[in-house]
Every structure is written in structure tokens, then in C-alpha cells.
Length: 202
Image (cartoon, rainbow, N blue to C red; front, side, top):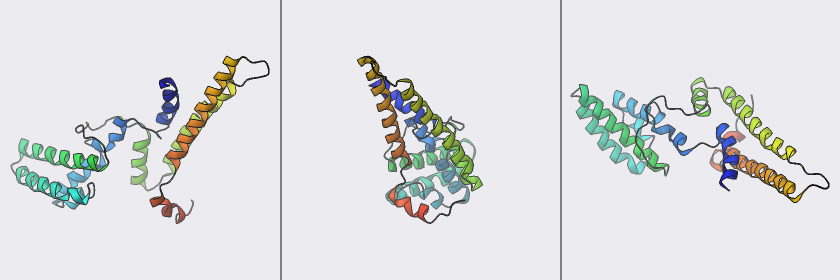
């Protein structure tokens, strides 16, 4: 069972469509978007830059942390660094909490996020998703070919043994389950469907 789980998930991970929990902590990194938002809040004195990453319920806690951080930062030096760290941790912790994910501390800048997350960030910066779509298309195609080839190699012919038949069934089920997972990943949530309906193709 575990071996089948690995066979199903590894190609999805390679394609960047299914990522381990560590990779999902993109927002936990010191160079991630949440910390950058918190940095901009401190630099500009505009706490709303941090509010956007948390729920309205958590705004009072962020505001309190922001006020304390601004007071301590004014002391300069190490105090400023500690104040920044305190505010970053507060915003990231509450952001992760809003996602229903545990907070395990800030990750160092430059953490390995694989190819897809950075490509997504680059697409936003450059206002073009073509390189990202090309990357995903290549990786998904590679994964589909891998499963399909496994099924083709396991094909059975008249007179084949029961064991050979079971190998075919195993490869077939892996392929179908992979396609089901892929279909779920690629499904656009209802709340975003209007974007697709009103977006013209290139």
C-alpha cells in the first residue's frame, strides 16, 4: 500500500502539483511573501500591508505586535532586529493558523521550493504565465507518459498467468488513480470560475 502511495505521489511532486508539507510552507520563509508584506508594513508604517495576510479576527493581535515592534525598532541595532523577527513570526504564525496549518518557525531565505513555486512568483512579477504553463505542461506530460508506459509494459495476452494479470491490474489502477488525483488538482474552485469565464485566451 505504501509503495503504491509513493508511485502515485512522486510524479505529482515532481510535477509540482502535489507538494510535501515542508514545501507548502512557502509562506514560512524569510524571503516569502508574508514576511515581505510584514517588512513593508514596518518600513512604511502601514500595518494594512500585514493585515492582508491574516483574517480580520487576527487583526488586533497583529496591530498590537506592530505597535510594539515599532517602539522597539526605534532603539536600533540588535533591538531593531529582534523587533522585526518578533513581528514577522507573529504575522506568519497567524497566517499559517488561518490556513489550518501548524507554525513551525521561520525558514531561512533561499529554501528549496522546487521549480514550480518560484515560476509562479516569477509569472506574477512579469505578468505572464506562459513560462509557468509551459513548465507544468512538460511535467504533467512526463508523468502521464510514465504511468501510461507502465500500463503498456504490463499488458497481458492470451495464456498469461494470473500473476501477470495482477501486475497489469496494479499498473492500470495506479494510472487511473493518478488521473483522478490530477483531475482534482486541476479543478478550478467555484469561487474562481468567473475569472476563467471572463478571461480571453492569448
